[in-house]
Amino acid sequence: GRPAGGAARTEVTPEALDKSLRTKTLPWRPFQTPAAQWLNAELAGIPGVHPQVRDPRTTSQGSYCYVVRVDPLVFGAGRDAVRRALLAEGTPLTMSYPPLHRLELFAAPDGLAPRLRRRPFDPDALELPVTERLAAETLWFTTAVLMGERRDCQDLVDAVAKVGEHASSLA
Image (cartoon, rainbow, N blue to C red; front, side, top):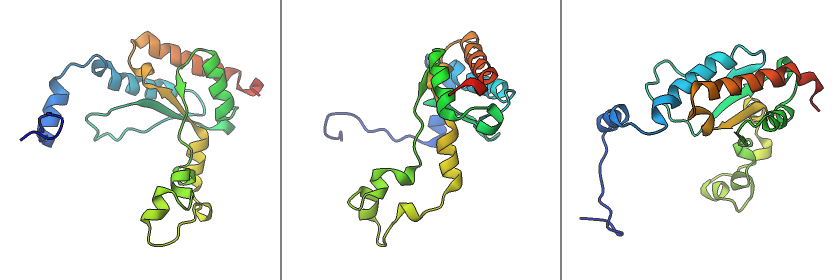
């Protein structure tokens, strides 16, 4: 039968999903993963810029944004100053997540997470230095950077390099 709303329910096996991903031509799909791989290689050559590592076993990867980490000591400026400069260059960026354990969902006593726990949860007592560092140092570019042509990706690399060259003057 059909569920409420009249939509047919379809069971999807891993094999069927894999076949669908390999055969469907979606407007963004042909270039998205190669664009991310190309950006990874190019941006890794800029001191202090660290693209996300892609596991070599990955055969398909969806990207709703493109993420890099900016090491402020090597790049010469912190993430927020770099973000402002890249936005001024017209680079499409979105905000990164804060450390998730700091979200009100987890921190507020009446939030969802504490209500689901049997034992008390104090997010301020957690010491998660890697989480904190990554939340403070990552830049999240919108997926638009993966949907253009190679010259669009080159524009992104050029903008990051330009900001890097002037990083010491960023406030």
